[in-house]
Image (cartoon, rainbow, N blue to C red; front, side, top):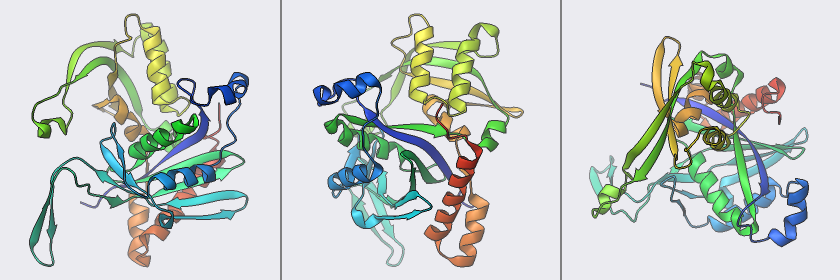
Length: 319
């Protein structure tokens, strides 16, 4: 089966940290007035690459990422600043075996090794508005570890990177309806065996299910719909749902039951965007690559087309 190629877009902005800001005295007035920091993607790239000449570890995403200046190219066209970013990223903390087909030899590496692969990001900045488009193959991408490590670096300056999912119009029109949400209180289990901890086993302490097809839970359904439309981030949506539910402060995850056409499917809260926020380019990319044999060039063209479709549709406009 041919691998699936998708693009996922996010509306991005740099903002001040509201808590534990090391520069709170310097930016207190701007925070009070609701001003955004004067910080561009170029400023961010300079900070990020300075820290990723080595490999950064994302503890929450359980992945590693490395990015050097030679893996970034930039240009400007029609007033739009563009960056092509190709980080190396992959799973870390797990023993692995590499098989070299030309010699038939196997090479074993311990848990201190990291397997890194090429990934692709496309960044567009126009009049201070930033859109980042991530390429994924078969559901694998670098977004989570990129965002986590970016914010670990930015917090030293009292800043954070916010990313809100942009849902393609085709997905908005697609028949995907959340019918139930189950709020969960999860506990990370630990083990004396380090190998057991790699997968970070979790136990559900308690849960609470809400039927989204009844009027009583219409407010929760509305919040999830706004997340589906890209109007609110999943973090903000989760906080809003907990706020309107009594005794829900200890819930730290959720599961959604979706009706997709005539089928139903349950997905974790963090996987929801993988269902509704992807733009499938499999057929177009494979066909174009078969002709040109230039994967990055064809991928860039499709990303540019997707970006212009997003702008023209207005789906990425701030609410």
